[in-house]
Length: 217
Image (cartoon, rainbow, N blue to C red; front, side):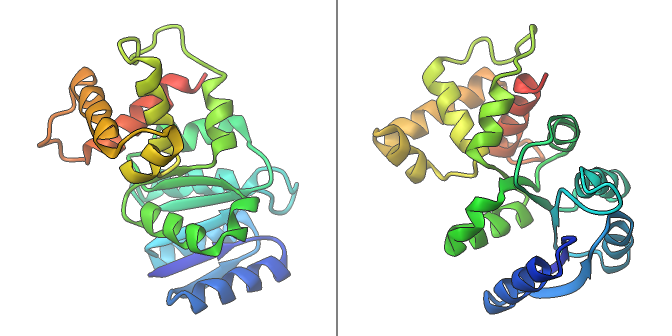
């Protein structure tokens, strides 16, 4: 996989490059600010953009704003954001306006390297991966008009875990139910959201995006 990496810390940039290279991926460019990241993404057209949130000049949300700009210029380009916290406004825009291929993880998740690499692959493949704390904040801001009004609490739990990138087997482990029960929940979710099996975009991704648009204030 060809990856563009962005972080204002040289130590973290080099650490990520080493980790990704050891995992068999190719880092085609490394950026330390938002403008350089946007330019590198346009020039390299990578399989994935991996960016921090804080970058110069203000060291607040330049990386996330750059991610939003990249998605506007190159719709569908997979982007995984790493952060020490959740920036609500631009996270809303990045997650709600896309069509999959988006991830937002807190940096603590990188400590589990195998799971982190799996998350990269999932986002590059068009999936959506969210840190549990990101999901929790999104769920705290519900819209008055909720397209998920017909979804039960258990089905909402399943959707929240889908948004974290979990497979049906992992969801079953988390909820302490059988994998067959999870499959029944997901089938009912698809039916309630009127997601046909012949949709151009994978039904699982569409369900997660519907969930995010519902939860984002």
